[in-house]
Every structure is written in structure tokens, then in C-alpha cells.
Image (tube, rainbow, N blue to C red; front, side):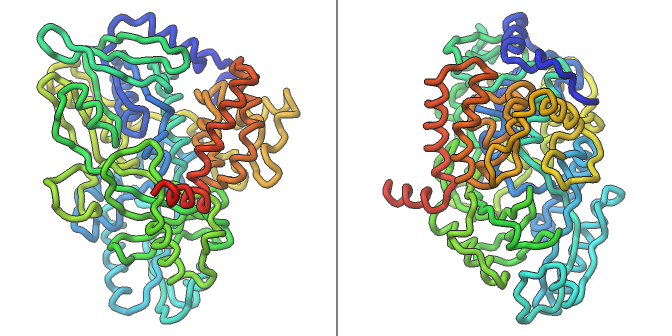
Length: 539
């Protein structure tokens, strides 16, 4: 259903009014990434009064920094974790059904250089197809050498025997998060970004009964009561757990994944490339995304979580070196348009056990003695199942009345079949007519944000009115994704975006300048030569 051109439900003032009018919530969710949004939407689908609070912006952390894949996990199949793969393939199918404007079938091609590898990958991927069952996106098939080189024209031909094609899902992670937030609002929930939780409230029996949070825009503090409080803060779950139980043993061991974004000429055609064996034992992907190519990822243990993790020199060198072994025109440092790092909230094991690539991607539920429910681990593909399992847990604990989850077949905001993806506007799904109408009403908003980019000024206004964007970073990182596609261009766009936001949100020139300065500093970490120069200086 197209969005109504009244922005009132998505206005921050409307959401704050809802916050203040509710004396007690059934479900308070801390964290606005994939997991928290999944928990909140599941709770709403069962009829519970639900509030979600996010310290910065939806998908600010790990959930905007993925490899852009909705997948079962081919490498988990190789590790023998058939149950995890089957669950993820089921969820992949549901996500394609519920958000067809953002999720699409992507063909992946694995080049093979020995006949033994040909048999290994063909058999393994046939099992992958079988596990997907009726939700399969397409059958895997072996291609001869000539056809493989035709489809991957930049692939090195030396020693190539052929390739194996299989199908998985591809999506826009941050925009899915935004659409989930919109869906929650449309179903009667309240979601607020830039609203960090500072403290957990407890009753006389020492049971968690709410949170103390702060509106970062006004500085106002709120005490919010709730029957169930869920900690769904991803890599930061241990920080919230320490608010509950100081000295709590860590649940999460962060692992850093780095991605490089390149021009599409490095991977012409429609196929993604999967490099099955690398120096660190992981696979490496080159995935077409929004007219560019995402190349990654790494697997590096990180001692502490961070909102803005930074790529290490050795990670960049590893990706470029590995890509150069397979691509005839090998990417160089100066070819990198953007670099981004994300932290995976892997379930921790005992100290000193194995590499992070061996840690579980399964999600884990923990309930403290005070009743705080923590959900951690998992991945984007299984976000819906994680939400369902979390709310089921609250019901089993007797904290919520029994009610069935309805998210398996719940359409996400913007959902509509999208056969034509030539224009970048496809990510708006059923909102496209509204965006086009805005440009008709104000033709100046049809102008490009930057001459070298496809994005329009209207998208900034739309992000502020309907997509809960509050800052230049919110827009350029997680609404139009320019920071992740071309960091230097994002810096050029910042003054225009700040001016449009200031007009829409009612801010002055000082706010604009502060926003531009802060964003320009942030964007340095996404520009390869700048991020690593700064890193070297700090060392």
C-alpha cells in the first residue's frame, strides 16, 4: 500500500507524544538494528504495546555494514551446520516474500581450478538447493570454461576449468532497517532513534521493570516502565548487561569484517563472484550492489566494540591481494570508492578457543536473574526468527499473555514486486509514486545531490519526513547510502543535505555547519587513503 502523503505518523513530535501518553509498555526493546527491529515487530504482531529505543540511528552499527546478502550460508554448510543453513534458507524465502522491493535473487559464480573442486562444489551446492526446497531461488549448475569467462569477463583464465553457479539473496541492509521501523509505526508501535538507554529500572524485588533514557535532541530524560525489557543491542549487549549486573561475564566476542567498494567495471555483468578459499580460511565475495561492487569480507578479532570500527591496513591488503589472484584487472588502493568496517556479535566461547570464523552464528537467548532478556548472535537473514524466539521466551517466562507470531507473512513497508531495477528508485518500493509526486510539486528537488551521482534532493526531504532521518549522517549513510558507495562524493553532498534538512526540521545555520563538520570528519574513515593515514598517525 503506498504511503499516505501525510508525514504526521513519522514526525518525531508524534512519536514523543505517544511515548508520553503511555504509562506502561508490554515490551521495551533496546536497540534499533536488525535484531531489535525484529523483536519489536514480532511483539506488535501479537498485539503487545511496544516501544523501541535506539541510541543513534537504525542500523547504525553492524546492521548497515553487511556484505548485502540474504543467504543460508554456504560456508556453514561446509562446516556441517545443516540446521543453521536450513533455518536461514527458510528465512531467506520469507524475506524475499515480505520485502520484494529490497531483496532479489542474485546468481553467484564460483570459479574452479581443479576437477576435484568441481565435484566438491557441485555436490555441496546441490545439497544447498535441496535444503532450500520450494523456496529455492534457482538450481545450481556447472558451467564450462568458455561460459564462465563470458559471464565473468574480468576473471583470470589461467588454469580455469569452469565454474559453478548457485543462487542466493541480495539486499540493501540499512534501507530494510528503515522500512522495518516504518512498519512498526504503521502497526501502532513507537520507535525513536537518537534516544539512548542510560539505566535499567528495577522494582522492590530487584526485577527489571523499565528503562531510563534520554532524548539526545532535547536532553530530556524519561523513565519508561515496561513488563518485558529486551536487550537487543548487537555488539553492545554486554554494556547493557553490565547496567543490570556489574561485572557480568561477556556474551559477545566482536569480529571485524571489512568491505571495499569499487566501480562496477571490476565485475561487469550480473553475476557475483565467490572466491572459496582465502589465506584466513574464509570465503571472499565480490557482489554487485547499487551500480558498484562490494568486495569483502575479513575476519579479525577486535578487543572492544565501537560504533565506528576502522579497517586495519592488513585487512585492506588481504582483500586487494586475494582479489588480485582472481581478477585480470586487479583493484588497487586508488580504485577504492569507499571502505567500511562492521563488527559481528559472535557468541563468545571460553578464552583462547579458536578463530572468530569458528564461532557460532546461531543466536543465543539469555535471561538474567532480574528478568532482563538478552538476544545476541545471529545474522540479518534470520532477524525475523530471532525476534519470534525472543518474544516466545518472554511468553514462556509468564511475562506476556500467549499470542501467536504473525510476522512470517507480514508485508514490510514498501513491499511490492520490483521487476525493473534499472533506476535506483526501486528501493522505495510502493513509496515511489509519493517521491515522484514530491519532485513534481517542487521541481528543484529533482536536481541531483552531486553531478557524479544518481541521487536527488527530494530523497533528503523524503528521508526527513517519512524515514525518521535526523542528521546528515542518517541520510548519507543509511537512507541514500552515498557514504558507503562513494565517500568523497558524500563529503561533497554534505552541505546541500544539511541545508535541506535544516529547512525541513527547522534548524539554523549553526546547526548546518556543525552537521557538515561532524560528517566530514566521520567520512574520513570511509576514504581509504585518509582512514589509514589517520590510523597510522594515531599509532
